[in-house]
Length: 135
Image (cartoon, rainbow, N blue to C red; front, side, top):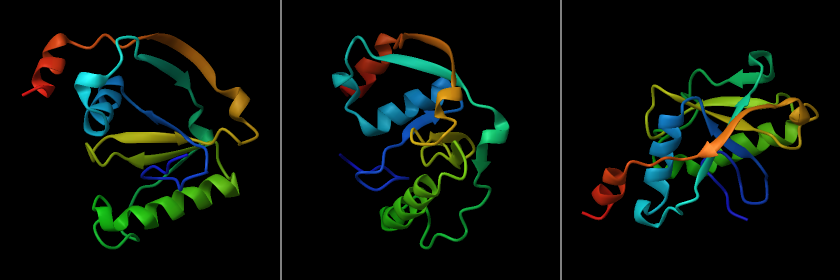
């Protein structure tokens, strides 16, 4: 229904982070944290490194890739990657914390069923985070 930083509307993709703490930061910048449902949960999956393409530089994006002006270029890049189905995953830097990575997963890739669920569980948010979001 909606596009993301790395996909145009209508192109399915699953956004993962390499660390659960980065997932939490990504939630905090995109959602009013006071409105996060109490039953929010996480899924940890194993994705073989050979199935993930890594973007090492975003120098090809002008202007600065984290700016709002670059979103359409990033969406086009990501959607082209999704449609090309060259890899199951795409490792990209997080705009929230540039030294860490998110991993996009293409649910239409032939190897999607090879993802291995490691853990599923509730997100145990510290109540102080909810309090901080109300200030």
